[in-house]
Length: 157
Ligand SMILES: Nc1ncnc2c1ncn2[C@@H]1O[C@H](COP(=O)(O)OP(=O)(O)OP(=O)(O)O)[C@@H](O)[C@H]1O
Ligand SMILES: [Mg+2]
Image (cartoon, rainbow, N blue to C red):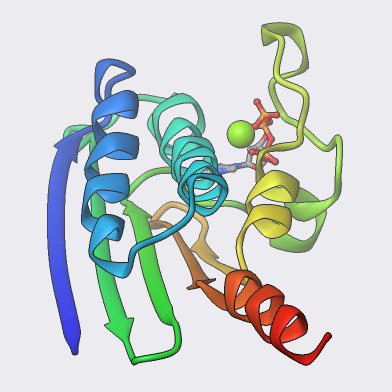
């Protein structure tokens, strides 16, 4: 079974919690555990916050965040794919931006851990960005794998 959804929202901080809850609600079709759901919410939150605070910081007419999700479900496990895209300033050096604690907004209480958190909480993660054009974050998470492994271990014990 494959499921799909697409969201287009204004890049304003009020929409950060909306985006996080919308993706979490979509992910429910995969029967995630509370911990998997919380990982997804945190990762989406970080990606959308980056669009709001970094992408459009220099001003832009568009100021939108585009979120696309796909859910694949088999009998054993599920997989959620999320794409979060902006048409903002882009990132000059993606490798450097991915370095833990690297931030271009030091004075504004940013810790430079957003990308690191996304990488840690999701199964797959990648970023495409072009200076002056925008940034796209792709993330996916396998759902129910840990649970199945635990069950298998119990059965085999
Ligand atoms: N969507 C984006 N558009 C433009 N630049 C971005 C975008 N996302 C991230 N960046 C750049 O990458 C850097 C690292 O991002 P990351 O989320 O890891 O840290 P941060 O946002 O600076 O701090 P934190 O997420 O801990 O609050 C940012 O400081 C910013 O320069
Ligand atoms: Mg961030």
